[in-house]
Amino acid sequence: MNKLTIIKVGGKIVEEEQSLKQLLKDFSQIEGNKILVHGGGRSATKLAERLGIESHMVNGRRITDKETLEVVTMVYGGLVNKNIVAGLQALGVNALGLTGADLNMIRSEKRPVKDINYGFVGDVKEVNASMLSTLISQGIIPILAPLTHDKQGNILNTNADTIAGETAKALAPLFDVSLVYCFEKKGVLMDENDDNSVIPHITKTDFDRLVKEGIIQGGMIPKLENAFQSIEAGVNEVVITSVSEISKKSGTCIQKK
Image 1: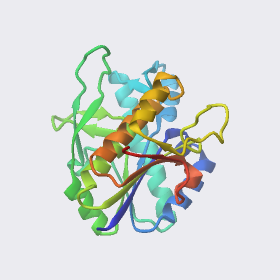
Image 2 (image 1 turned 30 degrees about the horizontal axis):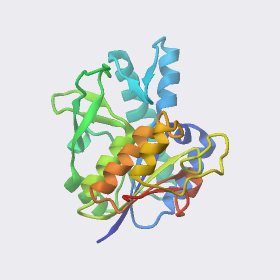
Image 3 (image 1 turned 180 degrees about the vertical axis):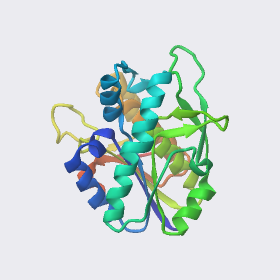
Image 4 (image 1 turned 90 degrees about the vertical axis):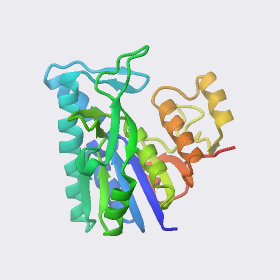
């Protein structure tokens, strides 16, 4: 089975010129089939602020009202996505920037209101694995923005970690998939003030205990939840690491048991 590396990078990395440049260089050097999934939350928050739109977050996830949806569509699907694509083309990588609406790539449904009304946020229902596989077989590198659609004409904001995880799961029957979540730290830390306190391996039991103890918190919780779901669905490996380590095997490795 052909190997496929799916890299997910957070907003801060793709929004700052120096870290973006380094990311694109490292990503271009990953051998074989690959997909890049990106965030862009800080840019969206900054633009919203300039437009006088207040941003609201709950447990690391953005509440998306109609005005916020317009901002994230512009930022994620436009500015951030096309900057990445242009940068990769300059390095000889034949990248194609996509939202979930393009080629019916990722269909979602608007999240139902329970305790919290997340607004125009999509929960992924289907990833078009055959279309992604076709693109990959043509030597095209998909660059996925964190936007999906409901096939009723609506764009929905969708967590980039979720998109990476659902894409990895959908492609697991077709490829030997490695999913790598990149952010500013070297991995999941035992002590957030000590960058070298990386936890090398985390099982589901470890995760539950570390959340209870308050060591794992905020946006790291949904990131790890997605990681465990991916492993259960047949993804070969999930690694959480820093952007400078994407071609190596360092960081935190998520294990089934």
